[in-house]
Image (cartoon, rainbow, N blue to C red; front, side, top):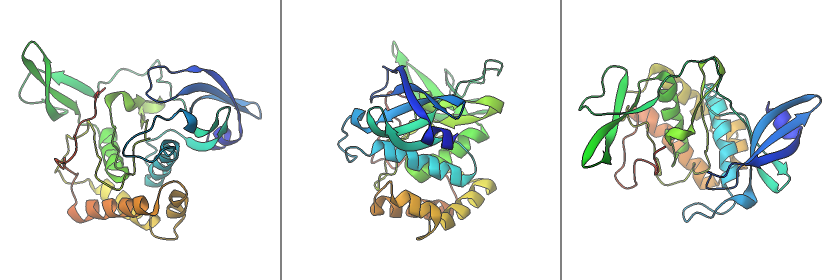
Length: 262
């Protein structure tokens, strides 16, 4: 899929208007194969006060590379290439399978405790002076994504950025505001905050630390996409996760939950 996204001819089919930046739904075709994909041209990125202009597409590619290095495959195939409107990010479009039963990952419950199979996030106002408890599923796929988000410093893990895929897989999308050198983690997946990392996560992070060492292939590829300071910050975040052995907690210096949350 990565090769198809890189070499194929892009044909724009339409624009996803709800997105804050320019997001174009495309078909990519090469050697008789085709697939649906999303194309986000750099020219369509809205300036952000805390991220350098024209870097969001590169951060999306970097997030994919780190995801692949973990072996968890949590981000759809993502490449950086030229397209009809210049350089941009091109990502495989994930269509939820019709025959896959719905499995809720987020919910609002009007109880003080989340109940079995759920992790509490925060209280939310639901109107008329009422509050409800925002919860997410105690799901190993979400837990892996929470670890990935901590590594890449994801500033925008919303509920709408969680996509079910074939075979029970779960994908995370929209990784433009990642890899900042300062703590920017904003997510709905705080349910494991302060809890010990799984043995699997510690093994993955140990291997990732080696992959991020200076001169290692992953570090070399990331150095083409993010700054040296940001790359050093990735190494530091992995080191902190391994040293503490727990999922991070909100810092209190930055809004912990993205807005809008979905």
